[in-house]
Length: 93
Length: 271
Image (cartoon, chains in turn yellow, red):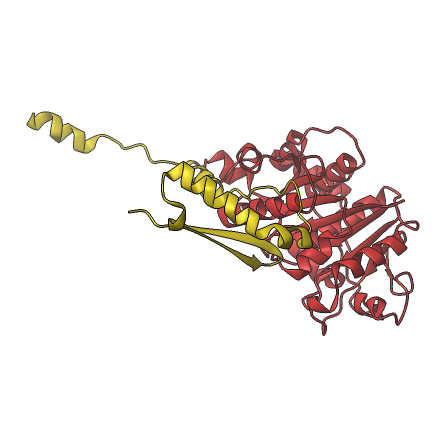
């Protein structure tokens, strides 16, 4: 047992090349923030007219998916750089 | 009708301006009538890389303000007589120009040129949107380093939102160091291609000659490293629709030593 440990000390450890590390890190970085391509742009007035309906549908979907009551789901719209960001809060028990 | 190409990156300092200048010169060498537009308002550099900084009279902002028309504001290159520059203003800010202004300027130059290359500023704000607005093709310049590639990926996402697709977006891999790649210490061309999921249209070697050329105010393709010139020729040919494998760029970079030394020596024009 001691002998195995002793010779293990002299075993050369294979150093990972920085290219391999970089590639792994790059994949993680890109996966985390892969943007979603816009396939359809909704005109502003159309969005404003239907915003309450959109909110209701999101609430319905979230409530069904996560099995929570509808009053525990809150949906808000915010504008950032010309895009509408839909913020959904779910209060789980 | 001109082909309108934006040279962009996301991250600063990866070589957008150098690529724009050299690609413009190469296309002009091939007999194309080329216009380069510096969209980096406030931090302009394209005129300096081309050695035209003392010849600029009117800028892009003068065109936007209606002082002159786009053709009157152009500066002709000293050596390449079919290469023109529309310089950016140093005193203005990017907010003084809108994407619509850029579209109108490019529209007025469309019938006169074969190629219009727009040099985009770094970042993803107004300046980027201005540069991208009139373009039909986007060349995304990146170096084989993590920050540059991840910013390039972010730009790809934004370009997709602007209507660009896999066919209209190409990647240029700049400052490629074959020695480091061979030693396993730098990302390869295949790594970059697979992570960005876009075609690489050129692999440009890291070269000291680029710095020397900028010091002289003459793009490297007009006066310097033959391997760099050859790579730019390949990129220009690919843009014109020729099918040249990117591996040829890599072999240009790899071709060093005795033969390359003499090849370089006899084909170089010293300024």
